[in-house]
Length: 162
Image (cartoon, rainbow, N blue to C red; front, side):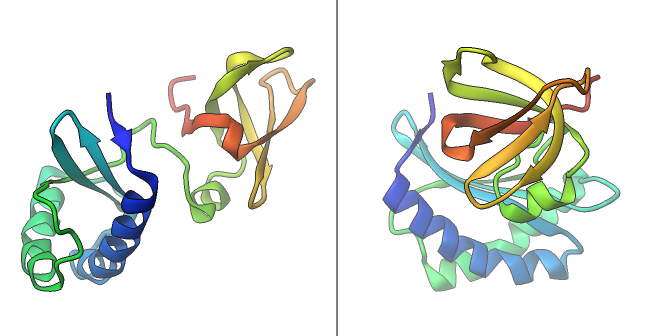
């Protein structure tokens, strides 16, 4: 199971994002998310890229190759790591404010850290709004609207399968 080292990971992710964003733009893509996680004995730097028409393996390869030199030169990570560049996928996790902004009105699925009495642990609905700390979702019947704290969700992802 992946373990995030929060203080180490967030500092590394911010530094890598600053390096990767201009490189990604030159490659015709944008950075969706950056994660630095430890799985077993290995550290992984995962850079998720996106563009309107979707990501191809060629996009991933181009960004990976273009990042080699800037990452080596700026050296934001002192440990050995494995670089992975990929698409965020169809069930992409919404993490940053711009993710939530872009997908207002979209179907989402939520997995809570602890179950809520009314909702349980997993539920689906339409993303109505968000702010820095909360998201508001209406169930598919349109009858029930719930506002949850983002910190209470293990993840909030797009639900493109309904």
